[in-house]
Amino acid sequence: MDARHGERLRWRSRRGLLELDILLTRFWGQGGARDADEARALEQLLELPDNDLLDLLMGRATQPDPALEPVIERLKAA
Image 1: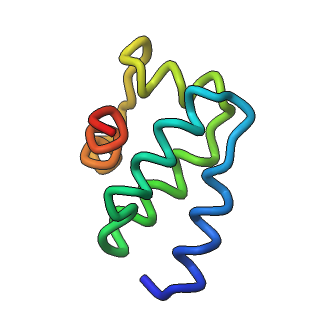
Image 2: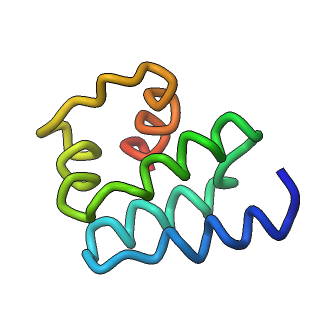
């Protein structure tokens, strides 16, 4: 993942819900997306509406795509 793509993802990580901002800021503080696969997964997650993404990260909803699970787990741990 190139630096410009990483910066775009970081910018898109700014959300309207404080809880998401906290989780995503911590995620980026721990290195963010580590490779192209994680970047693609994060892009997919950032397409979700804030409330759906928060439900997913808080364990109140499930994600049927197993490719997203590693990034979801990293975000939950943040």
